[in-house]
Amino acid sequence: MIIIMGSEVTDAEIGTVVKKLENAGLQANISRGVERTVIGAIGDERKLTPEMFTPLPGVESAMHVTKQYKIVSRESHKQDTVIDIGGIPLGGKQIQIIAGPCSVETQEQMDLSAQFVHAAGCRLMRGGAFKPRTSPYAFQGHGAEGLDMFRKAAAKHNLPIVTELMDARQLDTFLEYDVDVIQIGTRNMQNFDLLKEVGRCNKPVILKRGMSATIAEWLMAAEYIAAGGNHNIIFCERGIRTFETYYRNVLDVTAIPVLKKETHLPVIVDPSHAGGKAWMVASLSQAAIAAGADGLLVEMHPSPCDAWCDADQALTPAELKKLMGTLGAIAGAVGRSI
Ligand code: PEP
Ligand code: MN
Image (cartoon, rainbow, N blue to C red; front, top):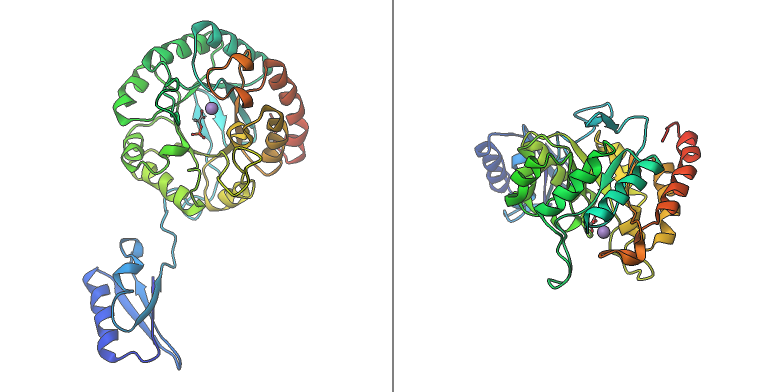
């Protein structure tokens, strides 16, 4: 951290800042210039906040110079991390497409979905049993019963399952059903207690970006999980809220190269919740892969018109298959495979 003192700073004011740094276990390096005096903190600055200094007399501003996230940062781990999901690598040369319905509805719907996901060439399946709905009167998901249907359907095709955890009290149930990847949804990205809980298990976690979260906030949310000991974290860009109303969210393609620079962890994209319309999914998927995404999380329903949730954005089985056919060439152009 560096603390910049105002032009009329006194020795006593500098002394107060130095003392505060020393009390926090750090040392001070004082650099007196003609216009400004700058005090540099030497030591582990992560325990400091700018607000510890900005209210002090004579202080003009204070700022961190090192990043607040550590375990998830590329600085701490140069190579790309490849996460093993039941034998399927995510984060390596091969791009993974995770597909399936928004929510688990019936055993038949899940059986058909698993069959179509597998037939399209996808190696992992998604489906929500606990649904975060805007209205408390809307279908909330089948809960544990839904996990059971999902597990049975996916097992027939050896598809690892990805499903959303909304409440730490459900974690044991998730572990009982041996959920392969725990999804933390956009609405819970900064539910720090939930993040701490999933940090204590060793299951891979997909951390979706909060709908209004900055990249720094997202990285810090991942650091919460990592700090608990679970380093199997996958970032998922799913669109952010802006002034635009034509589509559900704005897919922040820029976040993909930025995250790849800032973190060694895999980055995937959810084109379905970004666009909110099935017809946009192919273009957004192609853009995501061209920009360096390690995978996609795509909604597909055996009969989208009958979907209980997010019907507008679900691909048909035929559309998923067609999309898979177009992604190989794009992946190849950026040195990857599908
Ligand atoms: C979902 O994946 O079904 C979902 C609810 O996504 P998000 O948290 O991105 O809205
Ligand atoms: Mn959905």
